[in-house]
Image 1 (cartoon, helix red, strand yellow):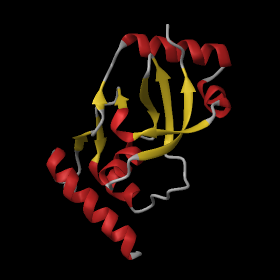
Image 2: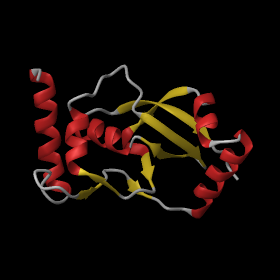
Image 3: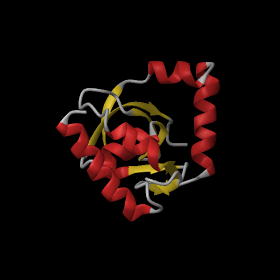
Image 4: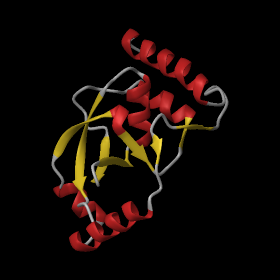
Length: 137
């Protein structure tokens, strides 16, 4: 393992220790994103999926963009600590970290909770993602 990857993993482990159970023990920890389970977001996501025929079709058509990791919301609420540590070893500044849905001015993690958690805990501020516009209704 490269020194940079090892250092990223150590930093993630240190920060995960502050979020919940030790990542050396299998378990879920809170995400560093605002928990938001607004029913309107889920309705907008369903509407987008229905309009595109499938969620994967809508995501493939979504453009890439950058989002601030500090501004993310997530309906998931937690991540597997060991998986976050594993993802930290493979972070690359050029890779897309996942998919977010933009709804009513907020960005919600649709896919990539573990990768984005690893990126944030590794000190990254921005993430390259696909941005799925869910409208404002």
